[in-house]
Image 1 (cartoon, rainbow, N blue to C red):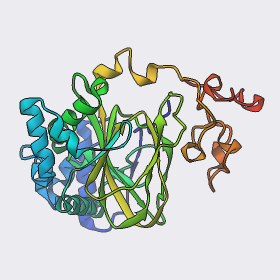
Image 2: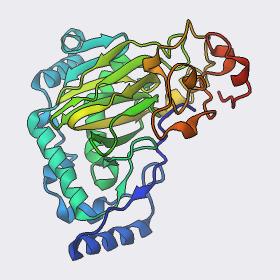
Image 3: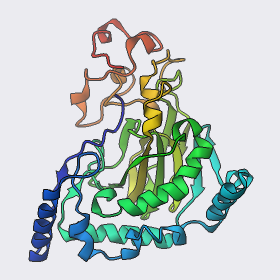
Image 4: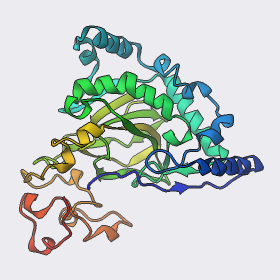
Length: 342
């Protein structure tokens, strides 16, 4: 399946002090009680004494104080009257099926990033956010899951009900929430992909950066899934929402550091329905792919259009997307024998 599966492994940063070593021991002892969330451990209890901003973890109070006031008023109006006029006026349709809106204050962005800096310096283990990003952290694992679940219920669910009623129907019953980080010397960008998510919210928290736009292509399995739609420029505090099945990738950062909070929302009712996207057949492509929408990790015809990036030659011959019957030219004979997966 063409997705960023969250089957990551914990990467342990060097321990710089005795305090950090003790914190790690405490975390490992906490694991004797089991693992949580997609099979990965949680270090929330071990980190609790070291929290810099406990208010971020307060699920009872929630994050409303840092949310855009106009957005909250519009959501309340939608809830009480059913009128979507106000909330729709705050959403900017970047392309069909992809929307952005003002969400968090600068204060929230500063607090959240400082909290993560505190966690990194604690010496506790850091779980990779997903199978593609090497830098960042699964924030559910450090004690933020309850607050994020409240945020999902109060903000993300009603927005998804309005924008993506098929995928949101019946309510989300899970989320994988994580931070990704792009900077020089680390991950610069990210290959084209879809998400292991039904509805994705991608929120830029900063810091100062240039480049690192999001390239938006088509919906998975559709005739336009490898066609270019837009380059979206991230803005601090602003959220982008789209279906997890939308093909997209992060352009290389040119300066600074970009940190984004990403929430993958999942709905088991939708996933067990006959309309679930990953049970649908691939439709034949309408034409040759736009090179900007090619994936070196997934596309079997990548080398017909582009050179493999440095260090990525190992992916040659391993691609499977799209299946030959769905390719615009049915693939050349040399490629028809490649692995096929639906």
